Image (cartoon, rainbow, N blue to C red):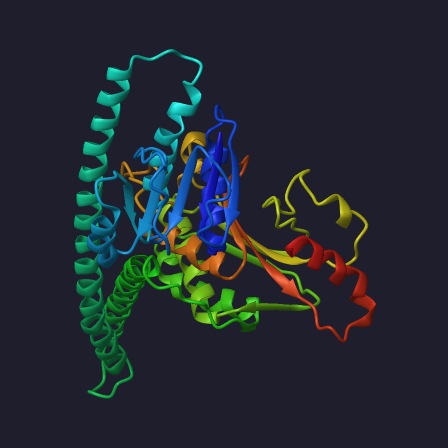
Length: 411
């Protein structure tokens, strides 16, 4: 099967490749063109936006052959210009699940070319597909309306939470009179709960807005140790309530780790809060940070045998890795791949199969920092890990060889 993506969006190209690679029974080649040229004949065309020119009158307009990714306000004009031809439309920003479902169905005709099928059956199939496409488009519109409503509601929800947290701080500071130790303890717990609600609200807001607005983090050289220390301070009440032992070991590194401190603090708080939640009483949480080798092209990290061969004898790691290991129950292997997805469900109780919003926001932030986050079950318990790239100054002449390798790897 041959597919052509007409788009200049590198993230969309990456997503399409990942989805097509997931269909192991499909031998598909994906080509990318940045203009509306129809010079390449293909079994499937994916159009990022409406074509800038009229599609050829002789073109076969099967719904399973052309997929158009459109903004909601473009749909009416596009349908009018398309005329009687049928088209499959997905609303932008397109979700991974929706795009994967369509591409999987679109591949069916190419897989069945060797089977002789009656024309009437093909016609019935196309009619059923068109009905499903129309229903899917309506569902996408409802989903966008729901997301927009939740985003506005969560935005308004954060303001009173911030005010309540401020009032707790005012009382704890003694500005309105002295407090007993018991009153202070209650206020501190209230403020901790308010901060937790605020983080959840921020996560929901970021996930809702993130699909509509590509926010580029303000990356600056930062101190991982300081970020970890602040995160540990935030989750200290949760750890103390369950008598958890928390150990920290952060190794120094050469080069600079560029990050947005507030966002990375949110990642660490979410991961540590998750560890506190599922670690049994009197359990342990270990936080480790150290330089590591990371092959970005394949997503391989410095743990285990899958290490970039070119860096086997290198003295200068190209990333900084943080591990958070807890003594809680393991996560079923079949759920690990979906743990960081936004809509992963959780059975509740001690079941860690569902990641929830916290892990989804972690993945979004780490990827925006050009890093990677993942989970592994170990003999001691689940271990969440993420890596961030290390950047070297061009003036470091003794690292020229390493810079060449890193540049080659990034490209």
